[in-house]
Length: 407
Image (cartoon, rainbow, N blue to C red; front, side, top):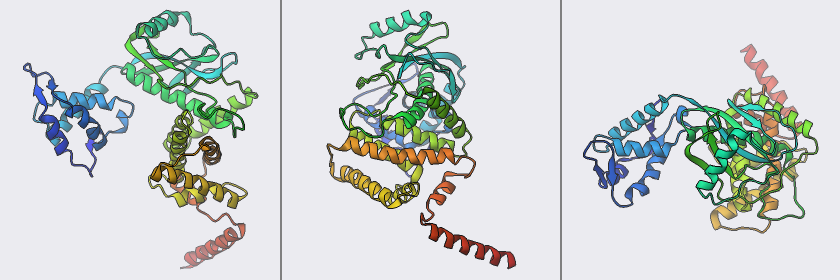
């Protein structure tokens, strides 16, 4: 599938603005640009484009820049799209290589975790240190680039993610996605449900990503200049679960269930939104992002807040209490979005919203095999929670079935 323009956009004016700043190089290879218009316009072009699934983990910004620079014509709507698809094809034709991404997660490194494969990425847990063949190269890379963050605490679990990818950047994207899915499930089962004493700026997630990520060949040698780090990284003590065997079983079982779900991508998207939300130190930001995770399952693509409240409250024994809690959270969300209203209780609201997300996610994981689509699952959650109403509805449906059978 090629890259396409999204139907509601008209990119001609943006491309025309870029074209006025572009000078083709004399050798016909690439271009130079004057002023700031290119930097201003490229994000707009990105939004206007619909990339296929095969390009999901690619560096879209780089592809767009190359297409703008190497378009041999005059940056028309059609010529740019042709150049962009040529860049995509060239990237897809590159030979895949094996990469090892080194990072860490905030699980106590003295516990034993078996290697696990998530979305084709093999995660190996190395305790308090990486194998010797990586150590020197990683240390040199960090020191050479004067990375403005500290290495993760010694108590964190070191992780090696083995990836097959076309570029180091794609390897990092795939590795971190798989690690985030894995730790999202840990957080689903291990995050604190409420906090009486604590610091508002410490993220809620029990299992967080380490501060620095480096990429190596399987031999241990670094791949070049590529390294990444987390610029805003409040330190958190390493997490040590009380019931490690139970957590490991739950995480493994959940991964297996999710892999067999017909709407797997929706569950994965919601899990990633959830774990990234509660990585945040700003609790209002965390709340808004976590609401998006809830919405991704309860009202995908619509933002129907009544549906979110109705579907989430269906899962609780005390439906009315759940409705009032969700309406309170909805009120806070709307107050911030429309008026910028913040609260010193934002972290408490995050804990309340986390309970709602957890219940919804566990419902979907536990219901694998019952529904063929997310829409079908949500139709189930739209049913009335009152048992007498359900009984009356069942009677009406049985009557309608007999009527149709006899027609």
